[in-house]
Length: 73
Image 1: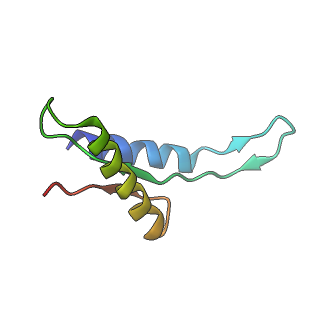
Image 2 (image 1 turned 30 degrees about the vertical axis):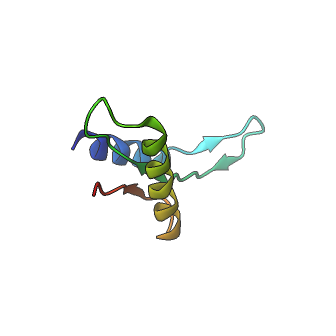
């Protein structure tokens, strides 16, 4: 699944690259990502957003710095 690989690569890239502020302070940043994948071009965009939001909260609740996917029914 392309979305899974891209999301994980993005998460790892953000985690591994320090963010340096304008004053030179180095910060480590992590990201939680929620992904929902439509089955066809007719999928309701609002439903996909809601599913991705649910997946995002699952990633946060399961420890953060994770990618979580909405499982299609």
